[in-house]
Structures are given as structure tokens and as C-alpha cells.
Length: 341
Image (cartoon, rainbow, N blue to C red; front, side):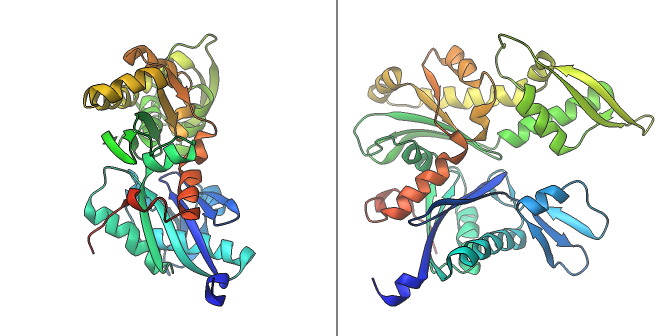
């Protein structure tokens, strides 16, 4: 290792629609922050990123806007994406010193060449000398400690904020896969729309997210739950609160949940018979923030007649996987996503 290598940092990033996690080589995951940037509306100067910007989201005055750089798992705002990556890197380098050399980034398996190049360009503009891309379900499988190189099938369902990636992995490749742009954000939006249509009640995205986490479910619960929701009545324009139950929210989010379940079924239908037999024995692993929706494992198991497990710490699986790839790039060369320059 040369003197310049010693002062250079290698990092892995799970660049998510909802949250961005950063792994530093030799240090592990050092940052987990919301994927939000706050700008001054006039000067376009960055006011805050991550947690600080999240606190401002939906609570700003007219001089500040908050931007989510990623939509549906891909970069929707190039400037904001670069500022987010650059800002997070600054936080890391402030703690560890040095410059940036290699960067491994997890991406949805179904994105286009243009979207891949956008991710690569944003990382390079933020200061990375070498950029490597890896499919998120592959990274999640590695993060969960699955043997991706073995000649048997492992099925992983990675439900993030913007995309749901389903893959059957064998011999370091994706033998069958589905990627849909229906995930946590669509479920949150379904809750927002439910309150507007049913109660003429406008609630914020943060409130809808809290309802999803507290009482959202994909399958009947042993003990149903109730939550109090506060918002603004669209008729009177006055603040209002009401109680809602978990069965009501389950009905409200039924459509996006069904789309995710149907994507799992399509992936199973496209899986070669020998690998299907492996999945019957080994089951399906759920990962990503969506894996934490109550009863989703039971719903998928009920629909597919297969064992379904929620992986350990599903929120950090992709970040852990990209970190393992970063630590041993030579071993994982063949799973990195090739992009046209």
C-alpha cells in the first residue's frame, strides 16, 4: 500500500430513496441518514442534509425547500443527489481525514443504462476516483451472509423506499428477477390518499409514515391496533384528529401490497425447476425497510405456500453487503454491474 492509498478512503453506499447508509472500509457502517437535502430557494445554497434536512421537511418557510434526490430508487434530481453524496462524504472525511478513492454503490436491479450512468456520474462528481455498482438484491444477499457462489437457489425480496427488488440468486448471478417501482413510498402515499378520500383530512408524509410503522399490516394481526391521527380538515381548513384501526389501514394499503406479492409470484414462475426446489427447502428472505411491515412475511407465505423469513436487521442489509464487496473487490468482481461509458 502506497502513501496515497493510506490517506485515501474507500466507501460503500446504499443510496436509498428513503435513507442513505455509508460503510467505510475497515470501519463498518458509519452513517445512516435520510436522503433529503434542504436548499435556500433563491441562492440554491445547501442549508442542510440528512437528519437536519429531515427535521425541516414539510415544515419549511418559503425561502427554504427540501428535496428528495431519489425517486423510485433512481436519481430524480442530479444536483441534489451530488450534494447529498458530497455532504455525507464531508461528514466522513471530517471524522477520518483523507480523500476518496473507491466507491461501491447499490442500485436497483431493474434500472436503465441512463439511470446507471447518472448514479456513476453523481459519485464521480462528488469526488470518487473509482466507482463500482452492484445490484441491491445481490448486495442484500451478501449482507445476510448467503453463499451466493454456491450452485443452489437463494431467493431474496428487497423492499426499499422506491423499489421492490426480487431475485433468485445462484452461482454469483441472478437466475430470475423482478424489479417494480412499488415499495415503501407507494404504501405511505396510499395512506395519505385514504385520509383525503375517506375523511377529507390532509396529513403530512411524516404522519403517514408513522401510521405505516405503528399500525400498518399486510395480514390479519392477532391483536388489532388503533392510532390517533392529526391533520387539517380540507372542508373547514381547521386542525382535526381522529382514531383509525389497523384493519382500516390494511385495506388502504392493500393495492401496493398486492403488487409486491404479485411480483414475487412472477419471479417464482420464471425460476428454473431445480432452483424452485431449493427455494422450497430454503424459503424466501425479506429485507429492506418494507420487510418490517407487520405480517408481510405471513402474507407472502400464505400466497406462495413457501416459508418466508425476515432477515436480521433488514434496514442495513444492502449497506452491509456493499461493505463486504468493498472489503474484497477482487473476489466479487464478477457480480459488479457493467455500465457503458
